[in-house]
Length: 174
Ligand SMILES: Cc1cc2nc3c(=O)[nH]c(=O)nc-3n(C[C@H](O)[C@H](O)[C@H](O)COP(=O)(O)O)c2cc1C
Image (cartoon, rainbow, N blue to C red):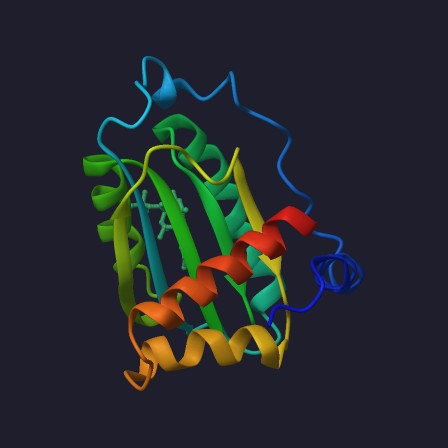
């Protein structure tokens, strides 16, 4: 069962003021111009282990977020990123090829390792209006949903669906 989204939102906001939700960019996202509903859109979920040096995480995650917001807006990519101090999980939504190319670039980034694509599903519509970061520093609850997907001990699709629901709740609450 998910914790109440409001509680998660309060936690993420109070722990870190540095990751406010991006201002709405719905109309400004160049890469989404001409996007026809449901044509070639996908949603990709991956998980990874953080390789950030302890004590340096906040500044580094800020850098990741500011790069991602600018680039993803240009690419027409929406989604959400969760960081738990030890692991990341990110959902990327956008045109098929664009998401794949971005994923390849992200996977090469030395700031994380064990980058594991959990699933990639065709979608009719986006679940995220813009690009958000939900920070759940130290949250064992969130971490416990990411860990099995990385360690290979999960039960496949069910775990992925649960993590997707949790990430949606975190994004809605932020
Ligand atoms: C966990 C994590 C998530 C990232 N998410 C994105 C993202 O959504 N969009 C993006 O452009 N870069 C993202 N990056 C940064 C990219 O890996 C890369 O550094 C950036 O796109 C610049 O690429 P370049 O050096 O090839 O120009 C992320 C990095 C990490 C470690």
